Image (cartoon, helix red, strand yellow):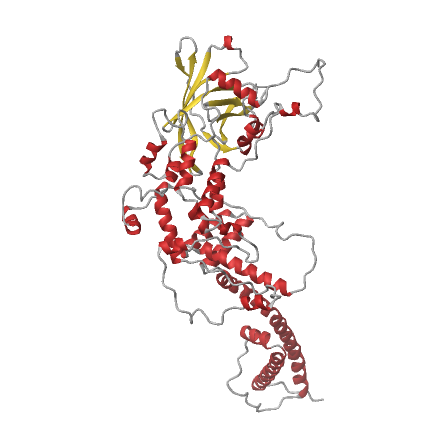
Length: 606
């Protein structure tokens, strides 16, 4: 029995070369099929697992080998090739996902860079969103960047918001409306954050060169920030350069019902380019063209038919009277009315009737020997300025010197607001004969509110075992001035919400004292402060207080800084200073009910 001859080394190499060529051809065929089914994954997989094709075809074997060994090699290598192909397929399925993640990581910075706002308007909008969400630092950074790019970006944002709102309203008007009970304005949240002072004198004052270019003179009066003449010239110049043009009606406006109104509402056929440009107006012409225009043309405007003299009289009445309600009838008139039942004559066991505010004020006037008790003192400059902010014509109309002259003559009256030897007609010369500037710049005590000082300090509590409490004590000082010289001082721990409405001569509580006041320059002198609950024969000492007016970022002359506090012996008139630590100043707070106190006959005392 003959045995098979062993394969030679050259034959084995030929078999391996043939198997390698067959395996490479099978791999290329599978890659071509996968590339047709999934082109992106096959391209990415071939990038990672690339099989270099042979430079030339394998040479045919010189000698044929027996079939049995070849089949065994083919089967074994076929299993190996299948395993390699499976591995390649798995890698091809995973690699696109990993590549996609890497691509996303690389594209994230580009998207962020693409989404980053480039214009000033986009920066301003981003700042507004950040402010509404409470991210104040991001809002401040974006606000600064936006204003560096465009100083008028806030106006541009406002116009863009109005345009977007009109577009949204037009789109909603074209759609069928659905009845809903909710109001879109209820959920809107807006908050104003003040980033700087309201008034800065260094920025308000203009340089001499700028004032000379604008007004032709460089004196101190024309460069003053409160100069009415310069304000009027600036307003007229701005009005002449920017004449008023009524905006066109909205697109979704209702169609006119009559042919006449339809002809009037048709837009002009000529464009702005076809019309000749009107020559610029002078300030005098701009002043002559100022008049009141109704916001709604279909509504009447009686104010536009009044002459200028009548309007000035109305504004003067508004500024001097404050639009207070009329004085009620006196209480004794009710006794003469037969319809009102009379009070019973029997004796009552009730407590004695408390004196009214008018009675208490009359007693204090006689006790302190106050003068000018019936003088009119009320004024309402805020109502005048609110009217001035409505339109251009109102702003120019409220600058009339007659209105401000009447305000100054009512406010600066001796001996409280100015000295007995002084006169408002002489003091106005120190302010360039400008009554409005005189009212703004000259110190005065405001009578329509109260000055409040909040003082806090720490006090050690009683030590119990290892526990040593520390108390934060807060108390308040109140100062209120009356036009005839009465001053009310109160030292209490009650907050302003519980005190300011009751701070009048009918109040009786611990820490209350009545005295007199006067203003000399920017110094306020308060003397004769005594406790009204102590009988006259037991009063030995009274308090004296000196304060100085100062301005703050919120307004002018609304801060009182205490300079000294002293006690005065009523018999010997000896004054002894009271050592006080640096105390918190007084800040003014307006109280609307103070202007109506003389209209009330009886005040409720708590």
